[in-house]
Length: 113
Image (cartoon, rainbow, N blue to C red):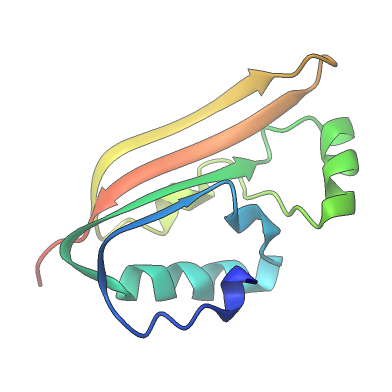
């Protein structure tokens, strides 16, 4: 299923989105993350990981064939300014071909309101 079409008709204690949101179009990112946050119970956890612009330009050119849209470095963290950040990481992985893949990951807890 296309993740943008998921209904989010209920709330969850944990939502895990690892290595999938980079398939969202640039204009879909913010609304989608708000849907994820709104579909999380109070004290619930979101675990998200995305490819970011720490990725080598040449490597991203090849990835763009698959419709991969890179997040700005640390952009993912900005969406969780109003949650308790349990962990946040931004790092690069060296690929066998010498290129780098940039990755941002966040684990955040929804604060009771």
